[in-house]
Figure 1 (spheres, rainbow, N blue to C red):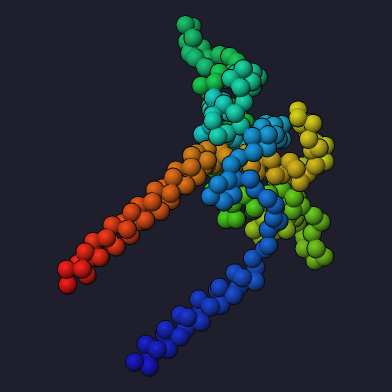
Figure 2 (cartoon, rainbow, N blue to C red):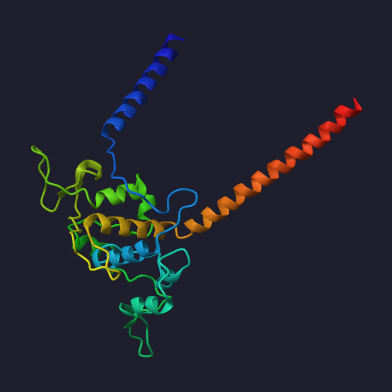
Length: 259
């Protein structure tokens, strides 16, 4: 019995130590107001369109979005580009197709039905171009990282000079929000890097927020529909609860009268 209690004590001590270590290492992420948070949250259409622009002009040279088609850009609840705008976006890319009548592959302008064009032919090519690191696909990146949107938003703004005593290998950069503080992706954002078509001032903070909003939508394209369904379900349950309450009250009142 004493050995059993000792084992339980050791296990609890180990768990407590691990929890304290995690709490000590936990980083407080940057905070901002997300329009899509909360039970009634909705995506900011302008932010989604700006976010796509940042992805296209800054991120797409390394990061793919292989689960997204150009027609998704017209989707209700998403960026809601017009069909003409989405067609123009798709046509600005060359897509490998074929074979043709001569058995050869050929390039053609993109169509709405095409998936987003990949920046590299394959994973090995991506690794070779990035010093051995593979740039992750960004379609569901927000869901694949602890901290979600707050983590991505903070990471894009977390580059700084390493503290005294911290040495970095060539091609490695210091980021205070990265796990381990070391990252192979260099700082990609700087003020005025893109020229927003709607005239918004393209600060690092604004671009980080916009592209993170876009990444949240690619990870949860039906978020607004879920919020609407959830609200309707809550209203239905409230009405049902009220009806059941009054029905039971009426039934029990008859029983009391008979007694």
